[in-house]
Length: 225
Image (cartoon, rainbow, N blue to C red; front, side):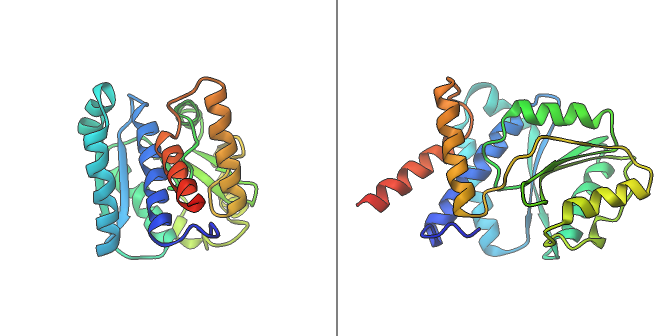
């Protein structure tokens, strides 16, 4: 992420908030388990442990129960992204899951209703993709019937979205598309995120991205001093 003046510990703090909100949103889907995959790196392990410990203390009631029963951490070797994402799908299918969604760590404003809708779409398709305006993705869903080698692709490519769906077409696999959304990679998307959170609060939604909202308020107050 390149968020301008937000760097170092401030950037890590904000990213932790992104992931905390995404996990909390996913836990709202009571028919699904939530797994957090992370690379085998001392700094990343510490980062993930902070999130895990925070949510364990923070969540209450139904969310706390869901966290204790349906959330788990999974370590991965340091490999390029295509290998790691392929491993995520493979391990989930090996564990007995029929449909799997992979959500990026920079999309804290995706509401639980969108995740539920994506799972519903996946029941009728081999794959579901959520495109970003840049031609990438913010969510990928696959069923056990989808057989393409995700490790074959360059996931840094600006056209990765079309490259993957073209591969699905060549294999005769059915895929569906979610609405266009964004991953927070730049200051432009950060501004979009802030506007969306403000709109959610205006609509009376106080449960989407609360940790991200608090983190932004803290950063803005720090910058104002």
